[in-house]
Length: 66
Image 1 (cartoon, rainbow, N blue to C red):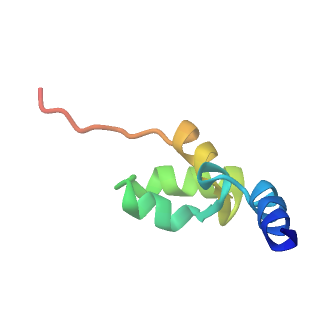
Image 2 (cartoon, rainbow, N blue to C red):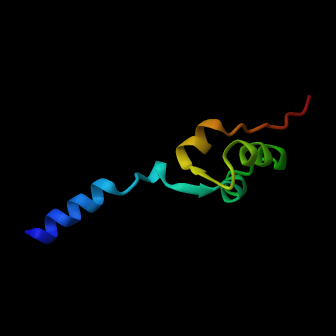
C-alpha cells in the first residue's frame, strides 16, 4: 500500500499537461506563428512558458487576399 500512496502523492505534485513548460520557439514552429509573434512571446515570457499561457496569448495573423 505504501507504493500506491507514494504514486498518488507524486501524481498530485506533477504539473498538468497544459501547465508544463514549453519552448517558445518550438511552440511558434508547431503552430506556424510569424517570427514577429515568436519574438513577442519571447520578450513576454522568455525561452520557456506554460503551454496554456502560450495558447491564450499567441496571436495568429492570417493573410487574406482582397
